[in-house]
Length: 329
Image (tube, rainbow, N blue to C red):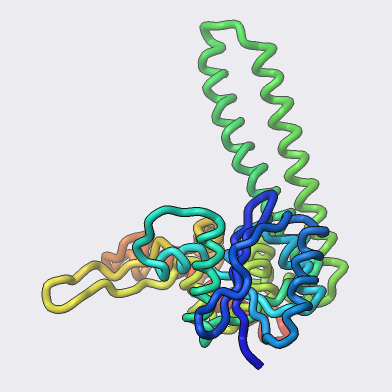
């Protein structure tokens, strides 16, 4: 059976698609469909007419814009892959002009050229998808909360010379409401975890690691799809931006060994906070931190190493049946 590669470029209202065969011949020429259940249904009906082909769908990871497509493709058991947009950008090289239709063709061409590397995307469980939405909402609320708190501080300074009592009270009321929303969102996340035995089991084991709180544990569970997407803590450390890499070429270029900027910065920030907490409460990690800093290592570099050690511990406890065992009293 011949292979057919379909590239999809997703936007809010519609998605463009193009299909090519293994000889790079266009089978379906750059068409558009509504990004809705009806639009996806009609698209899938067209695919049913291509029974002589083995179909592989490729599309860029566009967050919530592609959620409906992923869900509909999964329930129909279609084979599809999500491609990192940055990887796609580097693969296409220098290009002039940009349209959604051309992007769909480029995605299909990328899938053909890299068919040996494509991996079918597996939609996470319903509980994980809901947790991810709630975590995103919480992160947005936290950002707004910080902005409002900073704004309130500036108002309090200005209030010393200008009458701003009513406005200050309104700001305080909004901040209080945001705090309640954050607590409510966290409560909903805890309820979802309690109702799922696998999530509950891993959550309890991860939070037993010193320095790892509830939010850090939930974030790690989400990023690993409950430890099914990553089977190696080193790879996860690379994803978080904790693993250092060498930068050198020939005999003239000798850059510093450093972590990559291509990482999940929100997850790295959370793990840094976990590392700072662990240094305060775990004698083993505290001794490690003090020893390395006394040797002249930069504090942030050592905290980065501690965060990497916490990742190792998280993966270790997730694979065994017991909680983290503290080695020192």
